[in-house]
Image (cartoon, rainbow, N blue to C red; front, side, top):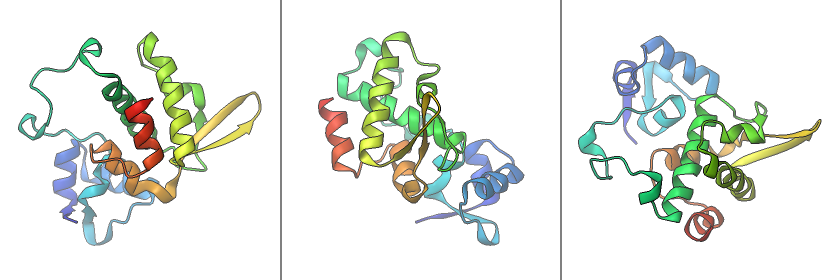
Length: 166
């Protein structure tokens, strides 16, 4: 585990040091002595990695170029990144259908199935109040969520199987 100063974390996330402190406080991320663990950066904001650090080709993959498992993984990461970026850790929650906002038409159904897979894996929690189910991230699994968003291997066997097989 590498620790970063607030200045280093702010530069990596393209935020101010005050914004880093605020994001840490809102998400319950420890930030003692002005230092933050590098592995929690995906929870605090979008990481702007240099192009040389990317594992993908230099060109962005278009949806037609992706395999089904790549599409499922991309949608799962996008949902987790979006919810963590909005601070939707339980008890904070959002409407289940709102997780698909911003996706192209054919990917909306995939996003809703991905939410179901995340619920089954325990990374999301669900509440049925009123007419629309609401979901929030399980705060006890912040590290695992951050790992998935950062592009690391998925630890949960059930979710890994859903991404691979659908």
